[in-house]
Length: 75
Image 1 (cartoon, rainbow, N blue to C red):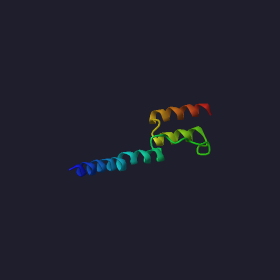
Image 2 (image 1 turned 120 degrees about the vertical axis):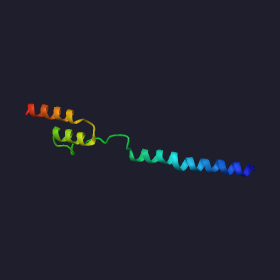
Image 3 (image 1 turned 45 degrees about the vertical axis):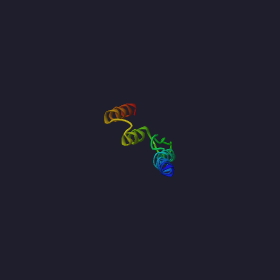
Image 4 (image 1 turned 90 degrees about the vertical axis):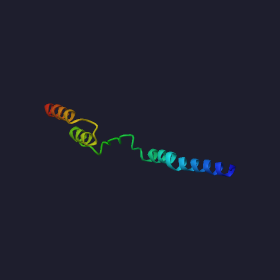
């Protein structure tokens, strides 16, 4: 009977280790929770930066239109 409880406990620990803790390690390696920084070589001008931010969902269409209007006024 004691062997049953030991095996059951070891099975639960193994299951938790291979599911919950393994997923946390994968998330830390891939960094899906953090937005990737835009390097200066990726974006030539402010409008390109705004387009990329819109594509990533960081800004709304309205914010993009406001940025675009502001940039066109400055040129």
